[in-house]
Image (spheres, rainbow, N blue to C red):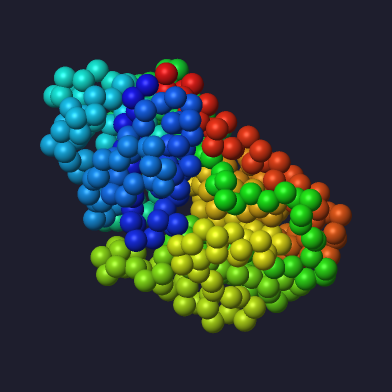
Amino acid sequence: MRVLYLLNVSNSSQLSADSGYTFADMLAPALTDAGAEVTVASPVPVGDTRVHFAPTTSPSTKYRARFDPGMDALVTLIRDRRPEVVVANQIEAAPAIRAALLEAGVDALIAGYCHYLPFSFTDTGVLELDPAMNDRGLGRSVLLAFAAGLAACDRILVHSSTAASWTTAAAARTGVDLGDKLHIVPAPRDVRLVRDPADITPPEGRAAGIYNHRLYRHYGTARFTRLARRLVADAPVRLTVMDLFGTRSPERIRLDSSPERHLEELATTDGVTIASDRGDRIRYRNLLASAHFGIAPFRPGCPWSMSVIDCQAMGLPVIGPRTGWLAEHIDHELLFDTDEQAVQIAERLATDAEFYLVHAKRAYASTADLTPAMVAARYLKAIR
């Protein structure tokens, strides 16, 4: 099977902060091991040289990635590679891919992977647009472009049951019948970030927590900041917050300056340390290994979090708000609705060794089916 994997890399200079690239870097070699001939069309190649590389230009903004698919380049690429399957990791690009296939005279299946949903649903079924995609009211247009992409795909892959439910509901509201196109295929865990729980030592009355998520406003960073202050003040906890971006370009700051503002606020909070992996996965592993537990993001529309999986594969229990995919995936004893509940859970992790070790093992076990080989098998089954 010849697979053309179209990958939008949002930040080529900070690949460690790009979950879509990390996904491809794990998955493409595993697909190759399973017998597929994979070409990744991307601004940067994946690490395995067996995976073919077709260089593309990185969109300058998140909106160009959705509304400017580059038809001329798509037609040329498709004529050159003659794929049997085209993977659209930007769902909104699927109609352009369909048109490019027609123009190139190539009959290929389009598989869309919903890495990111530009909407979420409340507990009462209200559709909410993601504020990250709603600058100057563009959110409704992004939603409709997403729905058009769903309609153009032959297969639609999502990370989780939560994502499947939300995608199905959004499609129905925009008049798109998904039929039997939808498949749940979670992302693979990073093979470099796996640790046997038997090697883990529980904290001895004081625990180190880590928050390894993007500091955008729409990730609920203000909500996390309030909790961070409570944890370091009221629980035997110290916190490390990851600076995943470093110095961002002026263009990205103009679109959203919230990461810089939140980082500055967190850096002045006693008991909170700011750390960077500097794009080095070994350094990142060491930062995770030095922690005792992770904290999930407070993003309402969270259909998946690779950073949560990173912690769990390292045997770190993750505490999180009872919302979205987090409520589906994280053990119920580690979910909270209030800051007070979060403080109590963190305190128990710090002081109750048996409780801690049970959840370290459960965290690791929750990622056992996410090896690249197992995910690749599910992926290939879904796109055939």
